[in-house]
Length: 237
Image 1: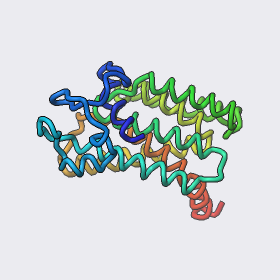
Image 2: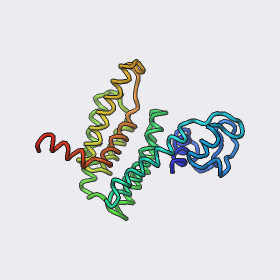
Image 3: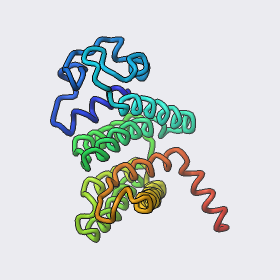
Image 4: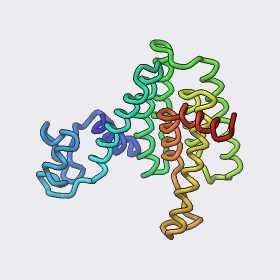
């Protein structure tokens, strides 16, 4: 799955087919053999270089593969037995692809959002995992909150972030949806301040917000109920 996500991350923003041509070296164009397509191990075996042209292979490829395995494995470990686990696995997969594309191109492709919506509808019909009123309310609330921020930011935030927030609300509902947005803004602000302090970014430099939304949503899926319990205990609710 991680290998396929790499293909989507590389090709979709460039308007290329994610099916044809077959996997090939981005430098010399040589079609890769089966043993060159083994996730992570091919990269290690080839010492991070193409066997044909010897150009370096981006570390991004094994990183996405390992990250995919880790994130999906953790969700399964934490949420197995919960009706929403399959939706969480599918949504985590989508968030991985969205995060890397947005990080590279400041873009959240509509094709991915539509695919996420389609998967949500399909899962709701086959293995319902969230009450329809709760999901629709969550989607509307998250979309509305981000829309207000989008308008107030006057271009400081992309409309793709607004649409992604709405999709997060659909999958997570009202409480976890709002929690994911809160976590996204806390993480975004914290990392932004660190980058400013280290002078790696200036106030005029933009940061893609999609990855922070994705991280917030993942944390809400993985530990959302725990966060809410800690909050209640901390404030004595």
